[in-house]
Image 1 (cartoon, one colour):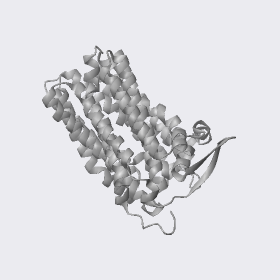
Image 2 (cartoon, one colour):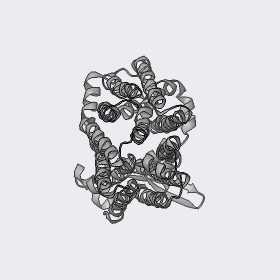
Image 3 (tube, one colour):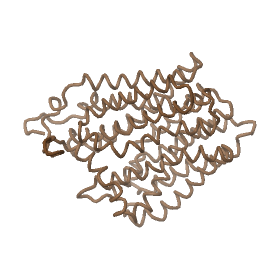
Image 4 (cartoon, helix red, strand yellow):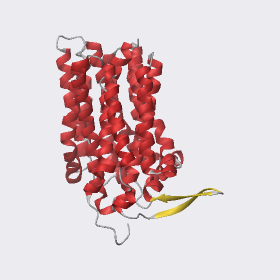
Length: 421
C-alpha cells in the first residue's frame, strides 16, 4: 500500500471477499446432501451415485494444478468471476443431464470452479490485506465458508419441503453463484478501495509482460513445481502429510457417505439436508475454539479428539444399517461428526504453516495442499468402490478405520516434526 493509503479496516473486504465466499460456499453446500438422490433418480445405483457425488472433490483436486497459473495470469478478481461462470455452466449441464455420466461432468465442472475460486480469494487477501491483519482476515474467511455450509443445506431442506424434488437444489445453487458473480462484477476497483499495492513485472513471453501482485505471485508459487517440492520434502510429507490427508479423507468421505446412507435407509432428501445443515451448524459454532485449543494446549489436543470424533461414529454406524433405529443412528452420527469436524477446524492449514520453510513457504504449502486434496478426492471414490464391491456398511467401517490409522500417525509423527504438538 502507498504511504498515503488509509488505515486498513477488516470491514473493507466484506463485499469483495466475504460476501462472494459466503454465497459461493452456500451454493456448493446446497448440493451436497441431495447429489446421491439426484443421481439415483437418473438410474444410478448406490455405488454409481457415490461416484457422481465424488466428482466434486475430484474436480477440486484437478483444479489445484492450473489454478495458480490462472490466478497469476488474469488476476484474483477475474479468476473468481470466471470460476463463478464455470460453476454456472456446470449447474446448467447438471440440470439438463439425461444420465448419471453427464451429471458427473457437470459436478466435475463445479469442483474445478470451486478450486480456482478458493485459490483466487486467498490470493486476493494476500494482495490487499496487510500482514498484521491477515491472520484475522483468513480466520474470518474460514468462518464465511462454514457459514455457507450451514446456510446452503438448510435452505435446500426448506426448498425440498415445498417442491419434493431434489433437483431443484440446482436452481438454489445457481442463484447463490449468480449472486457471487454479480458482486464480483459490480464491486469497486480494489486499488481504489485498498490503496495502490506493490507489484512487479513478470515476462511471460518475448513480447508480453504482466504486472503481478503479491497474491498472484504466491498463487503461482504454490503450484509451480508441486511434484519437485513433494520429492524434496518427501520424508515429512509422507508422514505428517499422509496423516493430514486422512483428516481430509474423513471429511470428504463423510460428505458422500452420509447422503448415500440416507438414501439407502429411506430418509427423504429434505430431512437429509436438514440433518446435514444442523451438523454444519455445530461445526460452525466450534471453528473459533479449535484455534484456541491448538495455541494453548498444542496441536494434538485438537487433532486427536477431532479425528476420533469422526472415526468412532463411523464404525458404530456400520452396525446400524438394518436395525429398527437406523434413522436415529444416522442423525446422531451426522451431528457427532459435525462436532468432531468443528474441533479440528484449521488443523491442516496450521500443520502446513508449522512445517513450511519461513523464507519461501508457498511451494511447500502448495505441495501439502495438493497431497491432502489427493486424499480428499480418493476417499469418496473409495467409499463408492467399497459399496460396489461389498456394502455401504463396509464403506463406513473402512472410512472409520482409516480415521484410527490417522490418529496413530498423528501421535507418532507430529511431535517429531512440530515442537508445539
